Image 1 (cartoon, rainbow, N blue to C red):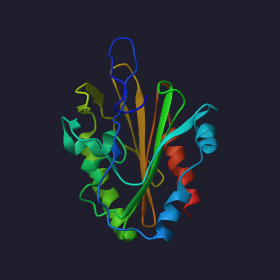
Image 2: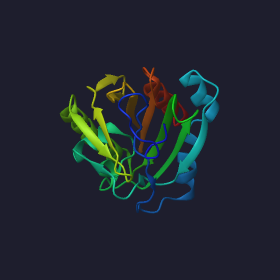
Image 3: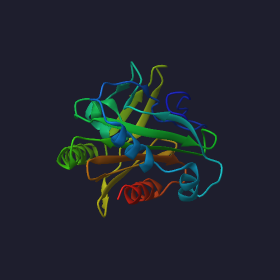
Image 4: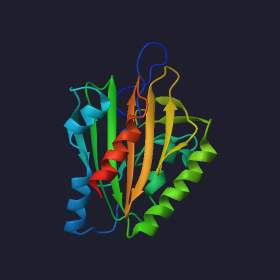
Length: 217
């Protein structure tokens, strides 16, 4: 379900995450670095294979950390675990560039938001992920409400983070069981940050991060 477009209806329809339009002010990133970030993102065919479908298509790309003016998290410190590429997580992180793709089939059955975020060096990327891990642990099991610009409130239960090799992952769930798997890892000076959402997702977010990391080697 496209984030920030459709409402969360708790009785008989699906939930959504937060749509965020392009904004932000990262430091300038060179053409070579920009190209490297672009090349790390998976194609629609690769995403479809991981998600077990053939219907998913890119419907939006972004070249910065997206933001939707007026969005509100009831617990802002938990935005970092609830969704990928949030402004509360990255706004003061010192990132130098970002690339992302939002991909879905019909806005209902499944959705993927894959992103790669560049930092000045590998130490800066690792520092960001270490801070994110602490936030994920502190938010585990908490109820967080996201309110979009349309004023609709979307309640989520934050999952307990787990470690899969070098990847940190969490499954966040709405009351009607729409689940967003969120996974994150570093590859050198890049943070790979992915959401994979649907009613039957398992470890797809982790698998997407693994595939991106392989591309970035």
